[in-house]
Image (cartoon, rainbow, N blue to C red; front, side):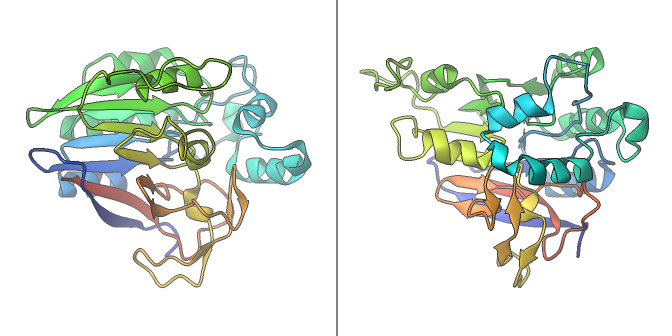
Length: 298
């Protein structure tokens, strides 16, 4: 039960003219994508959300970013730094050079995007393991079917219907977010709703961190989205008292939320959190299979 790929389906009512089937994939972490691709091919989505950490791009010295800086962005307190360090050693984030990281291959993430783009348009957000992108990554994304959004938004037409889709990165830009939400730029920390929205098209937010949505968006004037999709948590890694399917019990730990997190998996209001499609640590999943999420937007 630890690493198989489950398919979890949701129906979201957002008032579209024709139903649109979407796949939500997160946290591939440059592992072999073939099983995930087979599931997606079988499900035949018309749009694919890649909600961050599709790739592993966190080599020390390769960019200005460090584990410590990324912890600051994510709001991981220093009092949890030792425990967080243990987790990052297990998931490979602190290994000093690429030669020691035999669990993944830089081509795997690109292969996933390349093949997924042949199935449906791919809209990709940026996660906490994606400190930078390589020239080969950008060349692939510039080729057509993959749209990388780094605190950016775009419009996508599916079945003649327009969707506004944006992605909030780990290194978040709240001024961009306020604009995409249809709220004027932040003034003294307080967003203001403009007189008229830019568009009445359904609006979707890709937010790798579910805790970012809870922290910065939900219950604020910024919460103007019809759907929010997230990943990052790996479903809590272990889920106690799991009964399978959508009844996966109690999650044990999620980065950014700590022990027994509330938003580690599944649907919570307008947010859907994927438990990810890989196992990246020496600690196996328990009661918590990898999953591809299928969302029927109606």
